[in-house]
Image (cartoon, rainbow, N blue to C red; front, side, top):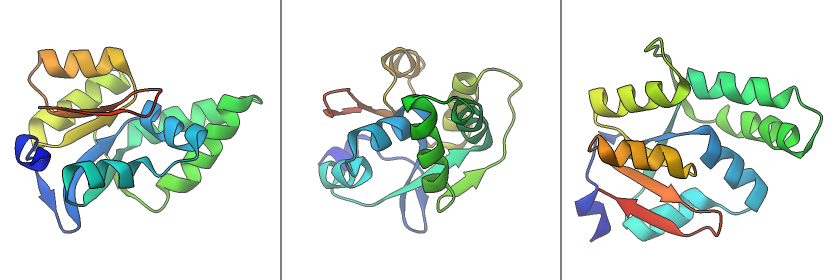
Length: 139
């Protein structure tokens, strides 16, 4: 089972997974319930965690008056219902995601191919969702 390969920290409602900005925007832009798609692939529930740095990045993007800005505003409404995490590594958003994942054993869910490569090089478990909405379990 895929879930055995990517076993990580378990929360009250499932596998704890950090959502990055690219994934959240992909959810909005695609109009699909990508978390459910991931849960079906894993065979177990996922409890999403959104770092404050990701919320900050969405806030910055939401100021734009284009499609990306609109997607960011909708993503911000979506993350209001999710567990948010205050943490500061002093680096970039991607550096913070990697720090959280390695320190707490979280899995990262991303739509950013460059980030998933960095995570894999560091041995951090991640789930990559491509623009074609293909789910890749990378353990």
